Length: 276
Image 1 (cartoon, helix red, strand yellow):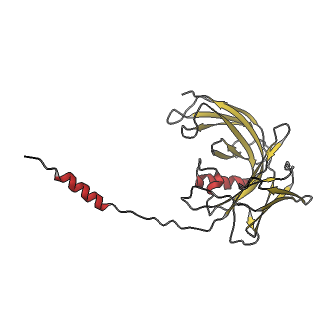
Image 2 (tube, one colour; image 1 turned 90 degrees about the vertical axis):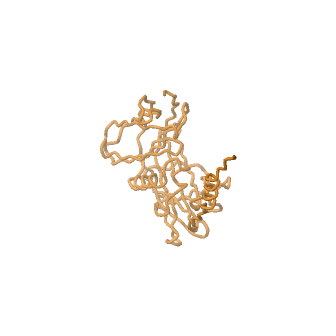
Image 3 (cartoon, rainbow, N blue to C red; image 1 turned 180 degrees about the vertical axis):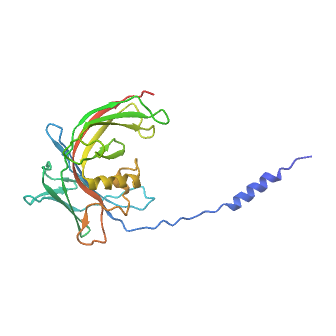
């Protein structure tokens, strides 16, 4: 007599008929202009150089993979001490606007950034913020929870005459913003740990240390918390409620996202070994 296995067939029939496709409506909002104008002056180099690119993007819906560039904008910088103008152009048509004639932002000068896009004008001001050079960058031997982290040891001397705020860029869109509240004027050192997901060793990494304003410090910490690390860069997913220092002078309700800031920046490139 043949055995007939009816139960598995019935279960398959039951679950196949219980499947239901749920459509989630994600609201679509009009794109906003994102202005990433984080200038870096590499003051510890000889000669001094600077990164003065203004990146213009348009915000996208949550599930979109592509962040579209903002093309055909007019971008210029005004030196408010003498009203001289520095014009920018998007040579590669990728939304990255660079000065037509390279320049180094001067000390104690306020610059006004103007962006004209889609018949609306956006403005913001910034003054270069001083920093201090890195004293040393070395690889350590300590680990954290998994035992497979890579330790990076950072040292620098804080300026006792100023209330200082710093932004560290550890590559791969990994950032850390700190203040000198508890080490003002001291030789300060700390460890940063890369996880296996953050970085594959052995490899070379370029560390950046920038001086920033208190306002930018607060802004960036909220930005990191809301956007997350490793998210394609902090300004790629700017939360719609987080306002920077750029103002739409044509239509206040259509506020932009992003920030205009000028930092003195020191860099250090180190080759990290696999010690695990």
